[in-house]
Amino acid sequence: MIQQTTRRNARQSAIRIFAQEYSDANLPEEGSGEYDPSFIITKLGAKINRALIGGVIDRLERREGDNGPSYNGHLRDATGGTHRFNIAAFQPELHADIEELLHRFEAGDRFLMMVVGKARWFESDDGGIFTSFRAEEFSVVERETYVRWLVDTAAATLRRLDAQVASLESDLTPAGLEAAGVPRDLVDGMILARGHYGEFDAEIYRVGVLQGLQMAMNTSGNFEAAPPESFDVQPTTTTEPQQSTVMDGVPFTPTTSSEPDGNVDDVIKTAISIADQGQGVPYDSLVLAAVQAGFSRLVAEDAIDDLRDVKCEIIEPRFGFFQILE
Image (cartoon, rainbow, N blue to C red; front, side, top):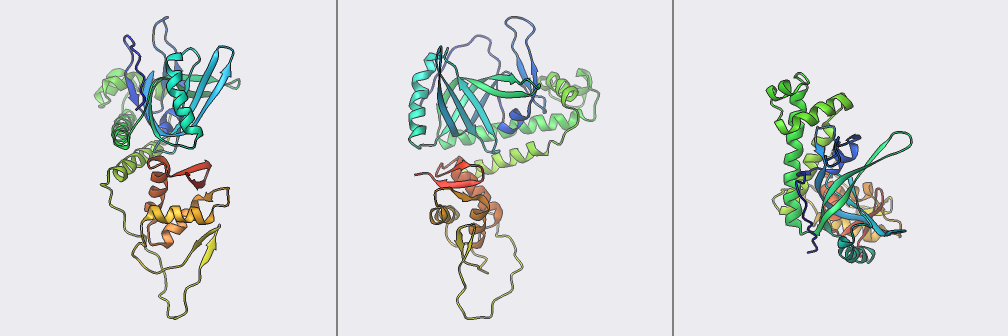
């Protein structure tokens, strides 16, 4: 395991947050004094100065500058969103370890990684806010550690979701929010978020929680596959053999069997190895191949995410297209 630890005085707590919530945030709060912390305020009222983020490494590159090299990386988490992090030229104590990971990445290795990072943002000329993190510590982790992070982050997100719902029926004051059940540590951020973002649909964050928990259950081996979806298929009366069909380059054979044929991971990887001509295989084609083998669409989608984000056996070199990780 690679890990860097740097001692800081009076640091803000590292918030657990999924990529979707952080990337949607566009409200910075600058510290008023020289040593006062600055924050990014999310739609759910989280005040992010530092965060603990995790996911599979999706991008890592070195950039040469006048002051020395810097490094940019992307972590894809269970929500499908991307956390962006940076290691600056003025952080030479981290360079040797990130170089080791860069060599692994460039050799085709993919791995789960966790980063403690300081919130950063960039404002474009048209006023857009783009968020990222400056890494303070990082570590390659095992699946069990990632699962714990998924569960903790899901719980923290649900807590903010519950607070956001409670805030909608209360006065937007500290006393009113606390009376409505909003935890005291979320009150300040909730007031700022409600005033800036107004009304919005929080369902995407609930979906992210479900995605995180589903991945955690799949990884820990406690997830029971859902039953195959019900299809209105007429029974065949012919004795002729069924014909193989090709859909988006993936061969499959129509079936009326309700029992899954083999292991869903093997079905997906086999479909990729057969159909990939160097450009990857479309997502829908892989789902179709799994469904035709008797698995439900939900099981197929979860398996693709798991193979990419947790088991690191397939990659998504461009959006919606998948290849076997050699």
